[in-house]
Image (cartoon, rainbow, N blue to C red; front, side):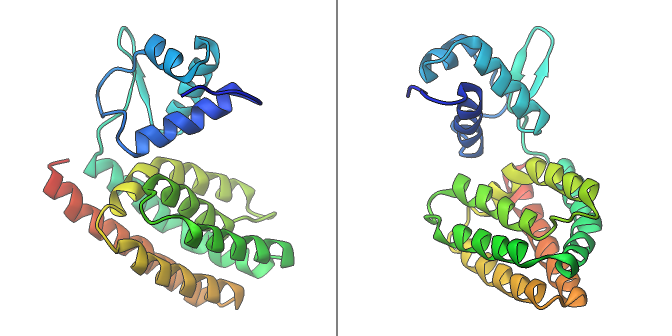
Length: 217
């Protein structure tokens, strides 16, 4: 697969990210940069930039004399990431719904439509659009730092969201939860937004606990 046009680093980032989320790049195996650059049809400079961004996003790690590798899924990390999301995200979404203008309200509607349009077999695409929808609910002119922190947590959560969507039909339950959450957000019902989002995140974490325990992670 060769990459051409605009930012090679940006495109490499997206391609490698999809391979990580779909487990085409296995956990703990060192990434052979020369082979990967050749496969993508780019030089090592934009590849290195993409790998560095992926490390900053939490999808890769690096060690001296070992280079970059995909960290294994960790029940401990999942607990920490979702605990932080539970502390920040429900209040952030509740605050944001009160100040959202019509442009932001339409952006949230569009984000959910985009999520619902993804093919159910495209787990990486579902994880990406899921993140976009959730982030559309916390965008705020008054709480930009909080929104940035929530976005960082979502990047760390991406592989776990991908894992959560593995069981057949799970996306259907998530679709219903997302629609009810959006309806409450558009109604500016802050208490219901908090309640629904906390329940949604907690249920995802509960599912992940079972999945990661079964997988021995």
